[in-house]
Image 1: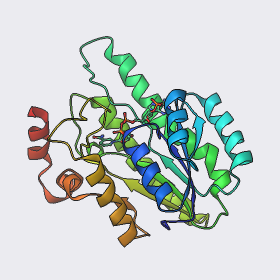
Image 2 (image 1 turned 90 degrees about the vertical axis):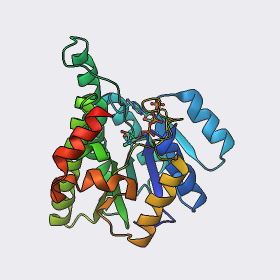
Image 3 (image 1 turned 180 degrees about the vertical axis):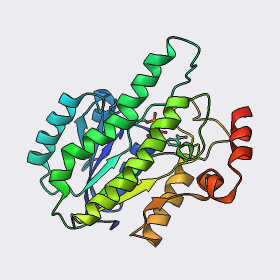
Length: 249
Ligand SMILES: NC(=O)c1ccc[n+]([C@@H]2O[C@H](COP(=O)([O-])OP(=O)(O)OC[C@H]3O[C@@H](n4cnc5c(N)ncnc54)[C@H](OP(=O)(O)O)[C@@H]3O)[C@@H](O)[C@H]2O)c1
């Protein structure tokens, strides 16, 4: 992925990692469109950062995605990068009947959301120079956090989907790069960890992740150092120990 001169749509651009990426990429000379459900935050962002555009989008709603595709096709025909970043993470107990709704919400937002977005926006990307789909998964795709079982499962599934997407697009010579971002715990409001000393400061995460992309523009995965022990647990034989450790933390 080139670092400047792109037209980039970022889902979940109203806060946290998505907003951080939006501001960094805007500063680096890209046209950025932030998307999310909270219109008041979108209005604040566009007022504070002239040049950034905004779009109301609920990735759990297929009609909202279809409307967003029509809007972006008309307003930003040069779109060449889709960042599937929107996500939710909530505690879920499998012994509580209410957990099922939590599970279904995670699948709708974190898994069906990026899959539907990919189907909707790929026709706008194929054939463009430097086209990219960038999926934000999680280090928990590789070792689950058992207090958020369906969250972890959706991220493992999005990792798997990203792998197949990359191979299918390469096989079809579609010219679309697929990049997976694998964050460790980062200080955002996702699960109320914005002040948690154990989580990585957002600015440090953005600097390291974008630095990796700058160093390796053809990267398949962006894995910052703090996510490595989870990403590599299966391969290096530490999976059981790591699962036990994060289960008790
Ligand atoms: N922070 C971490 O520790 C961490 C670690 C690993 C992976 N991640 C991943 O990073 C991504 C961003 O999370 P974050 O940490 O930046 O959390 P965040 O600050 O809570 O941001 C989540 C974003 O997703 C948007 N969103 C949620 N549901 C949506 C929906 N149905 N439609 C459209 N947008 C929706 C929210 O915007 P609206 O509410 O305005 O719609 C918000 O902008 C997520 O995919 C998360 O799983 C985060």
